[in-house]
Image 1 (spheres, one colour):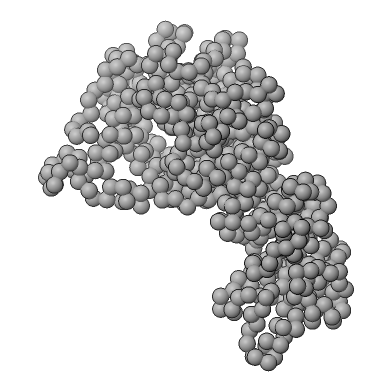
Image 2 (cartoon, chains in turn green, purple; image 1 turned 180 degrees about the vertical axis):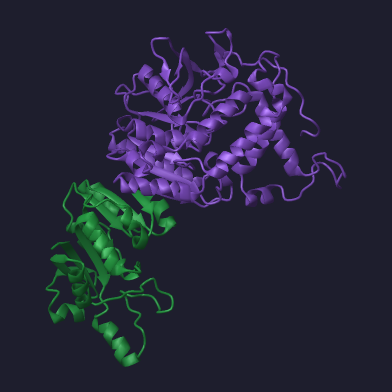
Amino acid sequence: MNDVRPRNGASGLRPDLAAIAEMIPGATRVLDIGCGDGALLEHLVRTKAVDGRGLELSQHNVNQCVARGLSVVQGDADTDLSEYPSGVFDIVILSQTIQATRRPLAVLRQLMRIGTRTIVSFPNFGNWRVRLSLLWRGRMPVTKALGHVWYDTPNIHLCTITDFLYLADEAGARIEKAFALNNGRAKAMHPAEWGPNLFAEGAIFLLAKR
Amino acid sequence: MVEAAFPRFLRPLKAPTENLGQVVNFGPERPLILDSGKQLSPLTIAYMTYGTLNPERTNAVLVAHALSGDQFVASTHPVTGKPGWWDLTVGPGKPIDTNRFFVICANVVGGCMGTTGPSEIDPATGEPYGLSFPLVTIRDMVRAQAMLLDALGIDQVLSVLGGSMGGMQVLQWAASYPDRVYSAMPLATAARHSAQNIAFNEVGRQAIMADPDWQAGDYAHSRVNPSKGLAVARMAAHITYLSEAALQRKFGRSLQNRDALSFGFDADFQIESYLRHQGMTFVDRFDANSYLYITRAMDYFDLAADYGGVLAEAFRGTKTRFCLVSFTSDWLFPTNENKRVAHALNAAGANVSFVEIESDRGHDAFLLDEPQLFDTIRGFLGSAASAKGIP
């Protein structure tokens, strides 16, 4: 959703997507929710022989994906996930999208139902720049990771890394891996410590059922 | 352009068969078992092919035609002399590339371009079938096409594509013969005919039946055609293939070859003249009874009904790759009907894509020059071909 990030890395993928790609074993069944123009999906299909599907809100993006030969359906994570049968995917990805859903807990529960494992990435609202913006300027933050003004943003349910831990717990998830995203680099983190919640611009979680 | 009444067409009831492409005949030993419980035998299937079947027999692409279509997808029509109905999409270097794929299209059972239908002679009586021809369904059409593939020695097609009623056949193919369909592309279609669509078809049928020349379907004897009825049916149907916006853009209230209203019932408006022309030219190439049978087949189509009312069950366990396409201004087979199919496929865990294309050209958009449709077909077919190892 936040499309302001630079592309880099050998794969040409956005760094958070490249980090996600590295977490995915080859030849698995993957559903990418909010797959955008299909960059991650295409990378997974081409280089990892993944059986990949996508769900994307923007019809324009969907058409682009299908023209690239990807299997993508136009749909809304809030309403359309209930159609998918349980356990059909090895991994379900929700990258930079959970903060734009109307019911994040319900969506997370659906993801865990559909997939054996779930990868969720999101911008960290606990980041010090966000905190400073509110504290010093008294204004809703517009940062690199959150590039929208408050009255015109798809991000209606922002959270901090700590908040997400509570959400994951509520959804019955076990955290298998966690990465902090900073300056386009993903680094393993201990999400329950105070450091990442203050310094990470974003986070990636690999979740399994508890 | 046409002005007054429709002329009565006195013409041979059938175009000579040597023009109708290739033909395969099934004798009494291979009857077509119909959904109605009846059998159709003998059966002739007229079809066209484009491109070359590879030695592995893996590059076949089956195209299913719509209500008023036929097997002349990409070659000059033998009756009208016009280009094939999907000439923009099928051909060398085109989205369905005949340099790469072996494209097959057969005239549907009940049709009037060489495949057995109500205008053909019933060998039991030596007379044209007329209304004694058994009712056929979309599934019967697909069964007949499967017999054709058997005859051609093709186990599995790389893809089956079609729009409108062609799309219904695509869905039926995927449900009835999942192992024979590697990928499927239903365009501008639905898994069931809506009440509104049945209503339009009924108007068309009643127009035909109200024509005195129809003679309860027995017009072949007197060598006349219910041309007026068929033309009105076509005119009414043609409106449903367009959109209000497209009609307004193309015709508005423009007058036809005149500066002022005639204060009569001539075709004052261009749209009237256009529709009359559509009706008139249609009767040259289409049989009225075939129109009754094929519209009925569409009305009867309700794929979910065969699977306990749950559409997803029709596709349970399918390995076929699907790509559905709808058009924003299509009100005959609107996006929500296509989306319903996409949802059912998702629920079945199928590999499915769904594309809605912005166009103001209504239902007919799937036949026209729509670059986004072309990109979608290329992307989908290309990816299916490479997954199947076809160069």
